[in-house]
Every structure is written in structure tokens, then in C-alpha cells.
Length: 316
Image 1 (tube, rainbow, N blue to C red):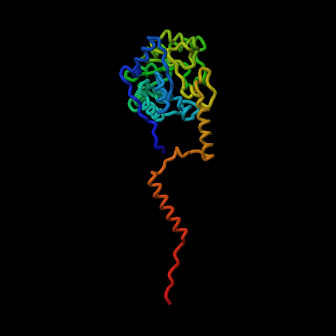
Image 2 (image 1 turned 60 degrees about the horizontal axis):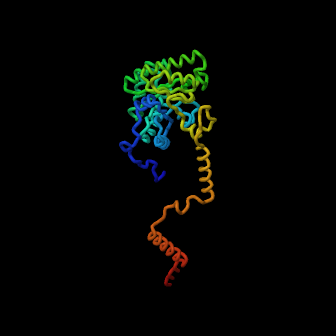
């Protein structure tokens, strides 16, 4: 529909530019150097490009797209095909950040061989550099199999949205002594199985701090306090595009909803008031062609004004 393109070329990264490609090793080195890891979700080309150009280390194509992009009530309905589609779009935009794809509910639950096959599709077909799975000690065998298949794994424990029904809702986890100890055991088990990092979601900050201190791999917090090795938020939460109240742990850095709504309202008004498009926003004929057409039009009008010639009389 448009004659413009969003894929404007950008300069290639120059050697020594200070922005080398982020890898699993980069993420792990940041923990050793005590350099915070900045992570954010993205689900499409323009958003991912902005996120990448802003210096984010790790971009997660999260199954949260089910809710913030596709309009579902939870993450459960999103499919493999939908996740692959969005991961491909993100991959095309990203030059520097590490791209991690969320494995959707049901894609790694039936069997380990099926899970490995599905995970491999994210790397082979969509260009992801790692996958994320939810669950603790129960996922050890799967993490081992994935890492054996050369597929890096980002773990995810605490409040795991795919376990919504089991947990009885989106509730903070680890608030009892038993739960506290279980989540620490989950973190250790995932590290030992081969996860390169672990997302800690919806847990008390003291628990996240204890896990971060005990693990040699990075922790990425979301609603887990300030002591994790890195932090992640959902892009739409960050810029107020969720159409719902923000969770306690969300900090909104911009109000894109108001910005977009005002822009669209102004656009509608300009159409109704005949102020869009303007002459400057319109295409025009070359002058010589415009003159030819104007001359032809005048000639036609002149002939029409003179009326038809009277018919000749027939001789008797």
C-alpha cells in the first residue's frame, strides 16, 4: 500500500566501534565483571530495531506477545508458528543484541525429543540464538538435552506465567521457607544442567539476592528486586501500550498510548477538515505535461461551447 519502506539501510558496525555482537559468553562475562545486563522484549521489526540501537544486551521474543500483541488473556494460546513468525521479524532487525525466543506452552511438555526439535526450529528457521523455558528441577533432563544439542537455554523460575492455572493466578512465589528453599534448589539444578542464565520473576528481593549470590551464571530479574545481575521488562509495559494497570515492578518511561492516540486523532481531524494531504504532500505532473493537458481541456470546452454544426438540408 505504501511506496515507502521502513528498511532503510544503516551503517554496518565498524571494527573497534565498541559495540560487538552480544553472545552467551558476553552475558556471562558481564556477571563476572559485575556489569548489569540490560534486557527487554520485542516482537516486530521496528520495535526490535529501536531496542537494539538503544544498546540493550538481550532481546527476548517473549510469549507475552500473546497478550500485548495478539490480545489473548494469557500466554497459553500462542503457538509455535506465531512465535517463529515474530522471532523472524525481530532477527531481521537486530545486529548487536542477543536474540532469545520463548518456547510457547505445549512446545516442550510432551516429550524431550519433540522439545529439542521445536527448540532447534527457533535457531534454524527463525535465527534465534537461544531459547527460554519455564520450570525448575523438573526441566533438568530437558535442559541437558537441549545443551547437548548445542541449543543455549535461558531458564525461568519463580512466577512462571505458563503455570498460571497451577499457581492459581499471577502470584508472588517464594514467600514461605519451603518455597524459598525450593526455588533456590531449582536455580542450582538449572545451572548444573547447563542454563547460561536464569530469569527470576515475581519473587521477594531477598530470595533473588540469595540466588544471585550463590550462582555462577547470571540472573535476570523481573519483579525480583535490584540485586539480580540484569533486569528485563516487557516493551509494552515500559511505554504504556498494554491498556491495563501496570504491575508493581513496572516503571513506565514513556506514554506511547497517549502519543499515538493524539497523533491518530489529529490525523482524523485533518482529513475531515480537508487539511491533509497538502500540496507539499501530493505528487504533481511535470509542467509541460500539465500545460498540454490544460490546452487539450480548453480545446474540448471551446468545441462544446460552440455547439454542434447544423445538419445540411437534403435537396428536394
